Length: 161
Image (cartoon, rainbow, N blue to C red; front, top):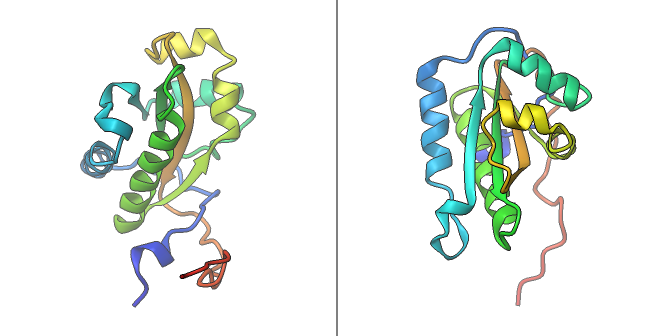
């Protein structure tokens, strides 16, 4: 049996079915447990977008980089935080691993996050304070097309002393 780490894959084709509120609560709980540099929890926040109209605006603003997933987890960090990007990546991993554990697919979207920052009106509509920037978007949903499994056991160089 593969571990949760081996089962996690970047999913880019989602079904249109909504993710249950119960699953969203579990994913948010996983986000809440993510590490933060120097215990500075105030440098990061999360906006969860289920609303189809808002998701459509986000897709348009990001060049369709969220793959029409039925729920988006938008991780925002303070612009002046030295830990923000690292904290957001750790939080995104927690979200993706929880999604995997729930049998859902997910993908880490960084380019779309950068594009979303260029749309001040949409950032405001999403309630993202001007002192923050979107750092990562995690698209989550039911898997429409299973990604090919690959052996990632020797993906990176590892040196042990």
